[in-house]
Image (cartoon, rainbow, N blue to C red; front, side):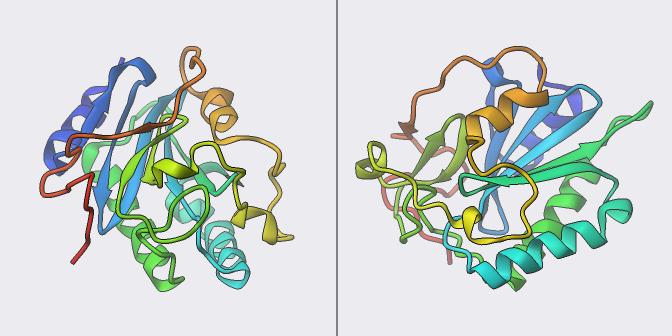
Length: 202
């Protein structure tokens, strides 16, 4: 079940909800995020396809250095996705607190020159978007059957195993079991002002 906090965040940001995966997804500062419920945490996913090795290392260093300030449980980089788990104890994160984290993270992604329109599979610019293993991202329909160009594998600093798929990252600690999810290209707008056929960020 999607919490009231995530439901409120989705309403405030005009995001979509995915009840089957207890998740919400949409655009924030030009980047495509998916936020999921977990047992004692909220999991935030974003594609890092197209990032350079140096900037990927810098991103991980920033997360390492700010783990306490951001109140992170942990984070992982695998198969072109960053998964950050926001720690929750007896008090859950409010919609405003989650949005604050999205602002911090998206600001750093911009600083580290992460492309906003990079296809999560090949890393090239894409004018369409969809769900890849249940995660919202820019995506070429023709890339669905292609091997992933793994930008997360270029960093020697990444501690998480690169063979872990984005789907496995979802299933690892989120509530309930996640079925095998098909790659889908959205045919309808998923966020206000976002056209899935010809997506452009001004």
